Structure formats: C-alpha cells, structure tokens
Length: 260
Image 1: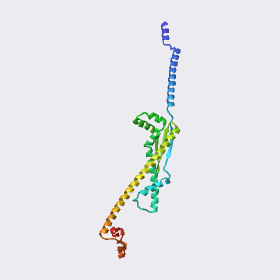
Image 2 (image 1 turned 30 degrees about the vertical axis):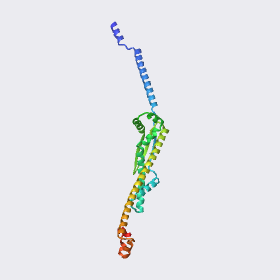
Image 3 (image 1 turned 135 degrees about the vertical axis):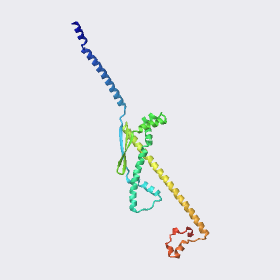
Image 4 (image 1 turned 90 degrees about the horizontal axis):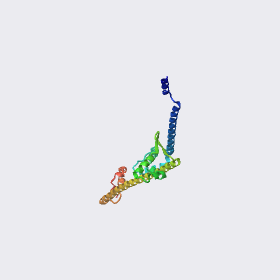
C-alpha cells in the first residue's frame, strides 16, 4: 500500500511549479520582444526618409532652335538650292531632328554625373563626409549619392521624352540639388554647342581661304599667260561678236587668260 502511494507522488505534477516555469518563459519572451522592438524602432528612426522629386523633360518648342538651325545651315556652304516646298519639308524635319538631338544631348550630359558631383560638393553634409578623404574615396561616396538620380526613357511614336527622378532625405534640399544640377547641365550644354559652332565656323573659314588661294593662284597663272600672249583687252566679247554661233558658247569653258 505504501509502495503504490509512493509511485503516485512520483508521477504527480506540481501545477504551481509548472505555472512558474511558464511565467518565467513568458517574461523572457516579453523582454526579448520589447528589446527587439526598441532596437528596430531606433534603427528605423536613424534611417532618413527619402523624398522623390520627379521632373518630365520633353522636346522644346520648334521656335526655340530656329536660330541654331539657321546658323548650322549657313555653315553648310556646299548645300544645293531646292524648291520651296522641299525646303519647307526639310526644314520641318530638321527642326524636329534638332529638338530631339538637343534633348538627347542634355540627358547624356546629365547622366555623366559631372554636374551632379559639383552640386553635391556644395551640400554641407556631403562636404563634411568627403572633405578629409582621398580623392578616390570621395568619388566612390559621390557615386553612392549619385545613384539617387535616375532617368526613365519614354518613347512615344517618333519622339523620346524622359522622366528625371531624384531621391533625397530632405524634400526642399532635394529640389534645390535637382534644380542646380539641371541649370549647370544646361549651361555646359550651351557652352559645348557654341564651341562646336565656333569650330565649324573656323573649319568653313579654312575651306573658303583655301578655295580663294587656289583661285588667286589660277588667276595669277592666267594673267601670266595673257601677258606672254600680249593679250591686253578682253577677247571673249570679240569672239561672241564675230559669229552668231559663238553666242552659244559657255564663257566658263573659254580659257580665262582671254579676258586679258
């Protein structure tokens, strides 16, 4: 009888001890949960919110680049004359092509990050992060910042437009960075276009000077021939008057020294 009672007590579960074990486990879980929550909250609080600034850029109004097209056409001295209707069609196509070309060049100038780097260096917190670093490390950090600038291409029929997205932890500061970067990009693009026009102008000048030099050498040679032949007066008019057949002669085919 005593033996059976002893076995009964060995198999008996103490509910109070069990409750204490469960409660101690709950306290540990609760404490761990609170600590995890505080750590996560503190980490998320330290991470800055990124504000998105978006800007859509499209082709400019056709009239904006009329002067540029006119200058480019003036520099093309070897172009032949065409009918007014053809000229009108070509001019419209040229305006559209020029607008798209300028827009594409602007985007290419923007995504090389050169202007963005210059703008970012003027931002206080960026400047403080890189000022004491070697040049190579500065570039790496600037590239990390530059990833905040994204350009999305939109193709509509024969036109290509772009959306500029820029994320920054301060909305107002982000807008200023984007605005300053775009203005600097426009300034550099304008400068490069003017430089190209000046180079084209200098090239055309060289062509004209070379053509004039060849022409002067030819005239000097013809003048020497005329003196050797003792031709003083213009002989072309005499040839034309001597015969009705001669009137159909193209004067450009007649030796120039005959002009005296």
